[in-house]
Image 1 (cartoon, rainbow over the protein chains, first blue to last red):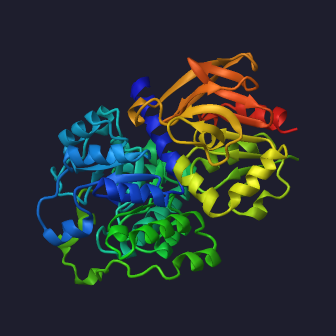
Image 2 (image 1 turned 90 degrees about the vertical axis):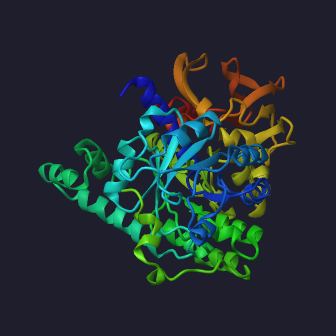
Image 3 (image 1 turned 180 degrees about the horizontal axis):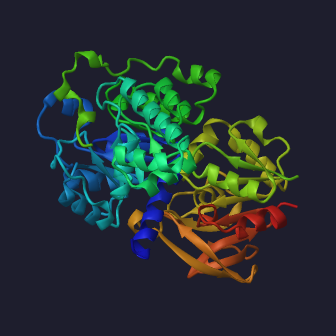
Length: 296
Length: 188
């Protein structure tokens, strides 16, 4: 890896570090972006439709129109992220040309490539990728992702998968940290990642990049739960603008992410928020409806 | 032992905490009024200035911190923290803790693609220090009684009495010059 690529990667990791403890919100219009910024979001994710709607429609979901992205970009001063399909490096080239702050190579959109993720080292832009377990997270980091988010199950308002993914990653890191070097070689092989990266993770006892929780977070309590489980921050997708009072809920989730360890404050924050988004019991989904199974 | 507070709503909190520990001082996370008790100095970290500013206002912490700085408590704002302390934000009014006599411009260098790292010579330390600029603001004007400690075309580190501000992130490097300067010289 050249020095310049390395320095760019460090800068991209640094931006994610500055987002820690914050909430990143999905928005589909400049107006929603302004609401998110006003509520205290640390960044917004610009997309054409939120996961709950993509899920209902079942059509091919692609990168948002640059018009929407640029309108959102000019509406706020916080960083703007946008999603590309897994493996769709041309959509990523377009977002980089638009000067987007972070690119999310996301399973929420319809994958463009079933075998390959984007070679993110080829880009100056920062990338965040989803992961369900340690192997997946480290494979994405190896490809150049400078931020990870747990996949959860987007657009369901059901936090169970996000919890599963974060607990699994934590457990696997503890396991890696307990291994001797020769055992680590075998574990690296099993996970399909390099020994060096796994060793670094085991030494740090955490992922070497910032890890946010995502997928199904709908309430302040959900956000605080993910923070107590060790997330560095949270993404909220459909949870805000699919609820009855987005302004109030957005603000409450921001507050809950900062005061995640204080049940008394959480109780105040959660009080009388109005109706939340409808949730989906994941037992009612068939396998092809699970977005988190896309990309590995 | 000096106790240095780090405003801990959001942003590069743990990075500052580690530096404070390395220097043998005691870090104190600040999220509530009672966390401000007994502080020898306070760091306002990088992060999103709109987000952190909102917390300061909504929790009422703003007034308590303003009073302490006014009474002489040393404070250091890095990046977003520098914006919060500015009396004038270009085209956007003032920071939430407007005590530092500068005009600052938010995201002055552009988007994340324009973030950069550069070594800058600091006359006061007689050494070059690594400066990491992440979607950084730019100080475009300083009042007469504001000391400019480092410059990269425009001032990037300034000191006015008990208020230190840097537009870059010393907490993201392996060096301790700026933290050591704050803890040893600004915090007395």
